[in-house]
Structure formats: structure tokens, C-alpha cells
Amino acid sequence: MRRFTVAVLTAATLGTVLSAVPAQAQAHQGLPALGKENCTATACHFDVAPGTYDVTVLLGGESAARTSIGGETRRSLLPETATAAGERVARSFTVNVRTPEGEPTGAEGTPGLDLVLGGSAPALAGIRVTPANRARQIFLVGDSTSCDQPGDPYSGWGQQLPQYLRKGLSVANYADSGESTVSYLADPRLWGTVQRLIRPGDLVLIQLAHNDKQTDEATYRANLETLVAGVREKGGEPVLLTPIVRRWFNADGTLNNDTALLVNGLGVNHPAVIRSVAADKGVPLIDLTARTKALVESLGVEASKSVYLYNEKRDNTHTSVHGATVYAGLVRDELVAQHLVPEGRVRLR
Image 1 (cartoon, helix red, strand yellow):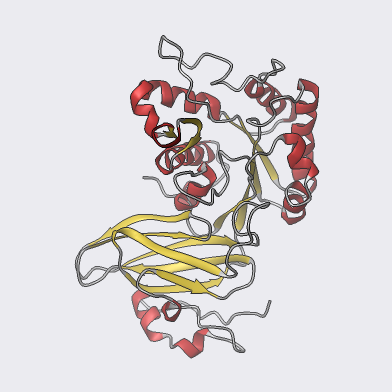
Image 2 (cartoon, rainbow, N blue to C red; image 1 turned 45 degrees about the vertical axis):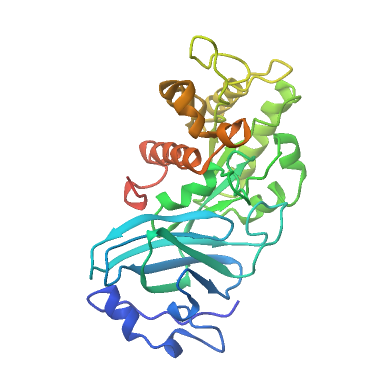
């Protein structure tokens, strides 16, 4: 793609910059202006090629406002932010634009970058989109529990993770519904694409287990090791994640059963194998099974229904938007605690 002209932000406030730079100065060789001219009251569209982009917004209006930003296939990119009447608040994030824009085996989606204004009283005073030349990618290799789900009421935790990240970190979510370690490695749209895109220093979060229902232990272990080696071959840093639990309670209020804890039909204990591979290969481990088990058990039978889609679909495997957001927060916390990303690059709320 052709190079965008990027103005140097030297004014005292972002508001001054956004109002001072004319539209024609933000365009180059016929490309559209990458500012508020591309927005309506509820959405923005930027005609850009696939890539990674920094987005800086100025939130607020004459009245008190509460504004969030989503984009592409239902990704949460900026949490709801409150501004007082007359106040302006600058926020920045980095977003991955790709085709297909959601699940890698799904529909292509809309070309370019699409953002949606949300919140109880949204107000956008200004916006700036520029190529992100130094962004670090966080690739997600996973299944339906972490993918960019295309429709309500479903949401994967990877769909909610971007809202916790600041400018300079971007989520490239290549999780895909229905995938096992076997199918993910075999499909060129999945592992064949992800491995080609990894650059030195990128993180690759690997959470595959829910669909390995008939994968024997030797094959499952070998597949995890193949993924780890493939990431390292490209200079990336692999991170293994044990799967989120299924909401399947025992009579005593615990989740201590094979269904909840992802032990498959052949007796393969997926979380145990993942922990073993992480230890053997010196790979960072995010034990989402342990973290989500503790959370669901603490909520109990009734309150935990809102984390999953029990009320809507009698579904105890897939998460609601609320549940995916909570689980993405657990991933965020572990990324910081294990020094996989700098604390200054995440939003702690």
C-alpha cells in the first residue's frame, strides 16, 4: 500500500491538533482523509488496506458523555469512558485490519476499517487513524471460545481482549470455531497463515482443547509441540493457555468432573497435557482452566449463568459478552503478572 502522510503531534493538546490539521493535509495521493470526515454520528469507515493501524480519539462533548468504541467483527476496542460536560479526553489503541476480518474461515466482511461508537451517551470530538509501524502483535490460536464471534449473543474472550490494550499492542485473532489441534495445523487459512505473519517479539497465545474430543494424548502433545516450535522458528514467543472450563456443576457446587475440566472421550486430560508441555518446553503458561474454575465456583450455580449463554441458549461452553469480557480480563492480568507485556501497555480497570 502507499505511504500515508502522518503529521507530527506537537500541539499542547490532541484537541488542538485534530481541529488544526485540515482534511487535505491528512490525505496523500488520492487516499481518503483519515479523520472525522469519515464518521457519522454512530460509526466511522476508513478505506484502508489490510494492516495494523493506530487510532487516536478525542472523546467528549458539550454535555456529559459515556463513549465506547467497537469495530470490525464485533471487537471491543475501547471501554466505556466517561467525560464531563465540556471535557475532552484523548485515548489511543491499535487495531488489526485483515481479510477475513473475523474468523479466518468465515465471511470476508467489509473492506477497510470500521469503527462503531457505543456507550450510554457517546460523543466523539475527533479521530485520527495512521499506520502502526511499530506495533507488537498478539496472535490468538484458538477455537470458538476465543474467536471473533460474528453474531449475538456469542462472544469469545479474544474478541474482548483488545479493549484492555493500549496503543502499540494489537490483537490479531486467528481463533476459529470448531477447530482442534489437528484441524488447525492442517488448514492453510489457520496455522499456515499465522506462522507466516509472526515477527520477532510477537506473542502467540495458543488455546486449543475443546474440539480435541477424540485426539489421543500422544497426538495432542505432539501438535502442541509443533505449534510451539513453529512460533519460535519465526522469533515469536509462544504462550500456552489451558482451556476455559465448561459450566458443569456437581451436586456439591464444584466443577471437579471430566466435562467441566476438559477431559476428552479417550481420557486425555487436556489441561494436564498443556501444563506438562509448557513445563517441558519452557513455555509461559496461562492456566485459564484453574482461573475460570475458581471464578465460576465462587459465583455458584445461579450467578455463573450470566458468564455463559445458559439463559439464552442453555449453553454451558460459550460465553456471553459479559463472560468473555471477564475472561479477557483474566488473560490481561496474567500477561502483566508474567511480564509478557508491560503494565504500561494495558488498561487496568
